[in-house]
Image 1: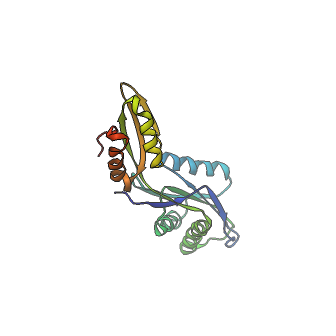
Image 2: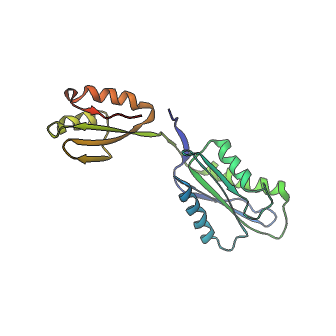
Image 3: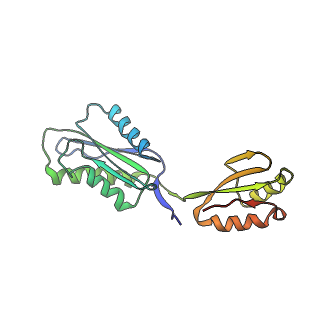
Length: 202
């Protein structure tokens, strides 16, 4: 069973107070896979071409992926503290980028860790979070003459097919909450006069 988890509801950004004339701008976006995360990072690079550094981190839930980059800052001073903010708040399926416009004064590793980690922390403080309930596919099969009965049974459960295949019989795919898969399947078996067939699932 996969438990619900938190992510951000929409892209957001925040600029912290300058530190010794260096500017730190933080950006975050929900992402579903590594390709989307890398696309987001590249988008920020394009949007902020004059920044000295584009440091980033992302955490994906399934399959689990955790990556970060210091992008030229001293090792462990940027990407890792950014990642630690994501992991500490237990948020998933999002990428963060912090761009730095160098102000002429070196901050040292400790100062950089506070700046990059703090930028992500303050950004997440302002972000709108949402709960994601993992879902699984549930396939139904039924005869055409039972369409009305099936539609009524699904409506009673506030469900609707996300995919329908019309062949010798109708096959419909539902996406149901992971935690409710078995109970919904059992309920549907008893609906429509027992004429809904649940296809095997893992």
